[in-house]
Length: 244
Image (cartoon, rainbow, N blue to C red; front, side, top):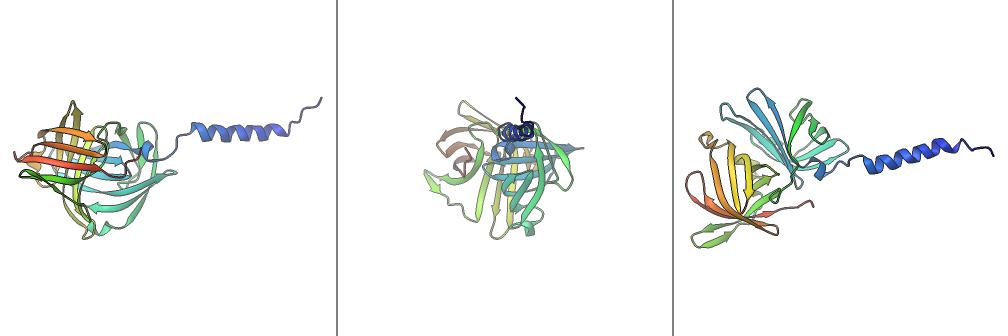
């Protein structure tokens, strides 16, 4: 019996499509989420991606100088990264605009022109951890009472990945940038500890370690302790737009 060789190329194409559908990684929030690093001389640049929100920050470890930060909501698909800018510490006129960048990645490296040049970023963490997310402050203790805070255009955002944190105080309506700080963190046995690596308002705080009592209940995170100035802190944060 003669074999029908015409069907072989068709079967090969179907097999290739099947393999590409199930074996190739999809470009989505979870693939990109976490933190990434690029170092050039004494300048360190950090990218944070979590819950559809991102930041790009540069600072000098050597001089403890904060250089810039910018970011906002993002979409990532088909090797393209689109960012709707909500804050920019050096170019406020960018707020409200959308920026599109090339963005391809593997498990440990990200290649992108997000800083103006096509460079390779190294992965720091993949966003694993209880505190990973885009958080906004919703309450602060004043005296004996927790005073509700309703974030609007003026808000304080705190991004946490698996190992890094950054808070950003902004007003998306007026395009104002009020300040930022960030670095590494740990959250173990109810203790939340920050190691500050950059601080836009006061470089003397760089290198400080702050420890708070903390707990997570659902989408709310409460922590209390003392600031770097020794002032008491008792805050409630809520995770926004979690991507599960």
